[in-house]
Length: 309
Ligand code: CP
Ligand code: NVA
Image (tube, rainbow, N blue to C red; front, top):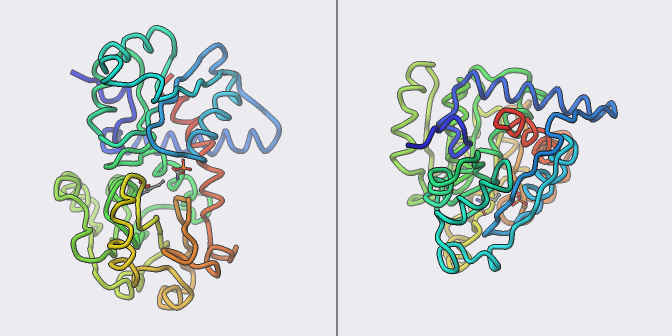
């Protein structure tokens, strides 16, 4: 049986206290780096990074993050390893557990990160699956704390697909006492299992989970609008269909005008400018927090490693 606290497989596995503590560590580590101070807490430690899907931010920030903490990272090649083809998942997990101190994994199926955690003896960090993106949620939580101050009662309006990023953000909101609103075309809502698991937490905190199929309705009481690509990695075959369904779900100046005046915008990136978000919003530093959040990926990942290693 997997000890789910030993890993970051899903944000739902971590307590509110541990999430808040991780964000605090990230904020402290960021301040230290800005002052030219580096901890060597992970001196002599190494992580493996196994990425079945492309990445700019996640690969770079885990590697730089390990370097900043005095350790190092090795990028593993999925083609070379041939997971499940050249060698079983079990045997790969057992070997990697003898060489590296943690494994950062980006893959299609959530089941793969779960299996690597079950078979190996080292912490496994979910760096995005089709279902979840907990690392992004940590960077977002840090950004909210730094830029807005507190979580309680804030409303996040996620304008986009109800998949990985949205799922982890729903969990984040449930855990930290925020309202979560999804605006998506019909048929792109979040899985019932994800909603059901968090429902008791929303109830307990007196916060709300809502779904709208009209983005104009969704932004009215939002503190932050959030955006993600319409076509996720691995869905390239659905591009034309998704682009037509999501056309009204663009964050642009007209939509932003319908939100409260203090409302900010963020995006997990990469952004497909002109699709889910316009240049005018992306290039407006008064509202756009996406690059701050991208910076925070670095410190959030260090904080996650700090907690697990
Ligand atoms: N947001 C995010 O995970 O970026 P990458 O895909 O570039 O890692
Ligand atoms: N939903 C996007 C997130 C990218 C960070 C994808 O899965 O491609």
